[in-house]
Length: 315
Image 1 (tube, rainbow, N blue to C red):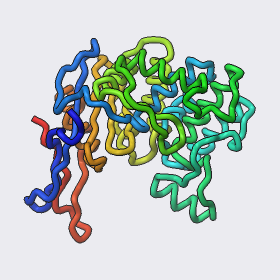
Image 2 (image 1 turned 45 degrees about the vertical axis):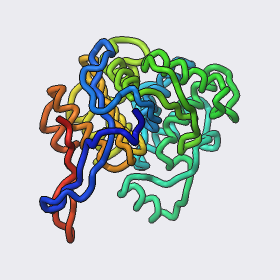
Image 3 (image 1 turned 90 degrees about the horizontal axis):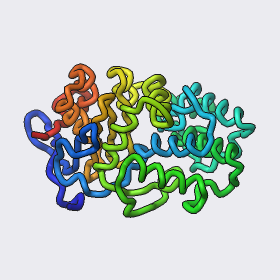
Image 4 (image 1 turned 60 degrees about the vertical axis):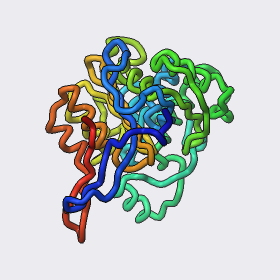
């Protein structure tokens, strides 16, 4: 199955009228990695986009990066660009004798609304430190320093660090990579079955030791370093103990539960419906409904007032 053939998993309802429909895929994997429930064909390959970051952070750890706590959470992050997040990236780089000049990610601005206002008011433009992937790139660079690898080409798919990412995907997703492209930040991004993304998150969340446990611990211990205030993945991790979650561009959402189950969602048109469908899938996993009510609430506005919502249609 391709995304073109995916079932309808969400709709936009405006005052009782169905305005739009969204096709997509969702899957829940069991603790043993098998498919527990699926909507559409979860063997369909997708680019995880930023939902790949926790696996990329594992590759950095495996390659020697001395990351822990906030620095490790930032290596998993699509941060909002808050001043304290950027300070954390600078501190992480400095711990390995590096400055922001070493960053190779695409320059950008904060993606958090408040953070962007503060940034622009201070007269700043696009900078690498402000782009949401700078923490991941700091982790990459610290791995290179630790392993004695070259820094200038660390984003090359043939670089040993990026080869380590490929191996981590094989180890945790247990699915073959079917395509490799350049992500928005400049790092390689790899397409594999949606099942593998859910499986990997379940394995990370349930890990009791080692690199995966370190990443999961950092994510749920410092959830707002992974995203930021009012960000859905951060709020879910803050609300549900032991859960890890990471949103990705083009409507990808991945969640790992401490019992080893994983959830992954991809909306075919890349729309805002990803987190709504993820919340609906998590209801089948007996997650605290109060946290899911917030995660799955995207209002439809009319003249500034709520007149409807984006609704999941999973059954």
